[in-house]
Amino acid sequence: MASTVPVASLLLAPLEGHQVRGPADPKNGRIVILAGGIRGNQSPAASDKMTEPSLFRLMVGIELYKKSGEEATMIITGRRRVVEEMACVAERLGVDKEDIVLEGNSRNTYEHARELLPMLHQNRFYLVTSAGHMPRAMATFKKLGMHPVPWPGHYLSEKSFELRHFLPAGSELAKSDNAVYEYLAIVWYMLRGHINISDL
Image (tube, helix red, strand yellow):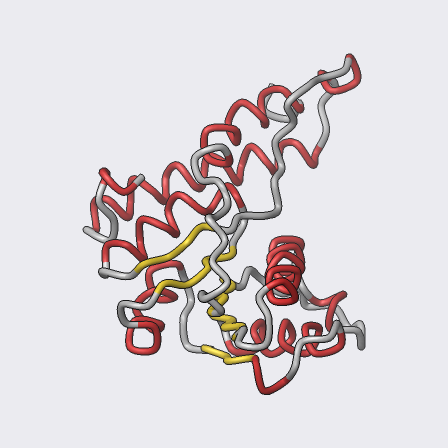
């Protein structure tokens, strides 16, 4: 059952519907993109090396960057190799190299927030990540006294179903796995004191 569209969507929907975009603020030009993973393939193209979450988050961030005017700064945070590949793609898609800041020491959501705290302080900034990851990400940054504005992308759940959606599919099982992982990660972050339940 977990490998069908309805079940995967049922698990993902509460996470993805929790945070909506905005409000947009033309004075807020700081865009923080949380990197996902990277593939170990031999492709010379940087975009081929990024996992789906990394690529979709980057596309959302670039779209926001192009709407934000001349003062926009794109901050990509994650493992060094991943953020460098993402920056390479961003430049090819029109982001000025001087507008890109890389943070390459963090390995998880909490470390993203911790490493960016000295840079962002009390400033407002757009937080770009997958919709299913956004509740935990927002709560983590808020726990450290930061002021993120949610800008989710990479939605995976479906709102309407057809008969074929009740057939098992490996892609849907992966979505269900992602949702379960996220629920467990939220509990783990609560136990570790990285998030407050009131911020979820």
